[in-house]
Length: 390
Image (cartoon, rainbow, N blue to C red; front, side, top):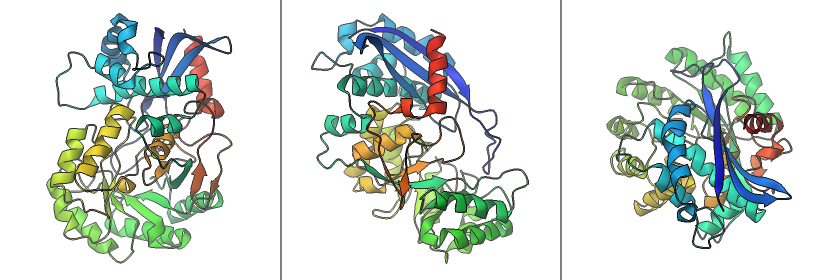
């Protein structure tokens, strides 16, 4: 197999919503297509992917550094041991040539977009979903295509009040979700407590509702919220402080008996190792949320999971930040705890295939080859535009 061309374009996310720190109206995502000399039904085989929701497109890094490295490599040097498929590990090594270790920032997302497209490509060549390919690649013997999901939303919309929040969660319940996540930290403590209490009336119980501060708080604020929420029995309290402030997270765990969640803004196994060692994360309780679309792709993500297991944590404590099809396949393939989904927001990336049904908080992974982007019409429209540009 030989790569003929790699193309990338930024796509703007739809919507003007905010969490405690960030407004997403200007956010973009890199969509990527890897075109090969292999034919499927008489058409060149193409791997498709994007990096992730919630950061920015990485066009500069992809075009100036990573694509040239791949296109200059010997085609045989990129193949797996069978000689029939491209090796995601070798692809990742190639695009990271001459990159210093550490500083896992935007280049991690740039690499993800390309590495993930290789998984889509290989799964299409095998005529199987990426989740099944992941499970076999990592020798997972207990593969299931049924994934536990929760609906993420509850942002700070312009003019939103408690009624708007409860209506949103009610819509998610009507779609088949049983667990939900909302934002906090973008209003006063008193206002946020009213929002949580209103959401709980619709969610049904604290164990059905998670809250996310998106790194907004200092230690005092985090503890104040923890004390105010301690009797709610929430599903988890997410990213109370800066994601690299492991001391804050560790000290917060001494004041909050419920589950803490963090990790979505950590992009390497070394960062995850430090999180496990120094952030006070509790075995069997707290939640890890690293995102393969932000952290060099599935290759590095699997190393993260292995690192957690070396530290005595369970992969069932892992719920990737993602909200889209890629995360769904990774959760199923690696046997993780569950998957986030954005049912109504962050389009065209957010959500699953058009025919996906949520039943009692469970979704079945599509049997479409690859990630199944072809069965998500608004997202596939963007890939069609991308391919037309080539």
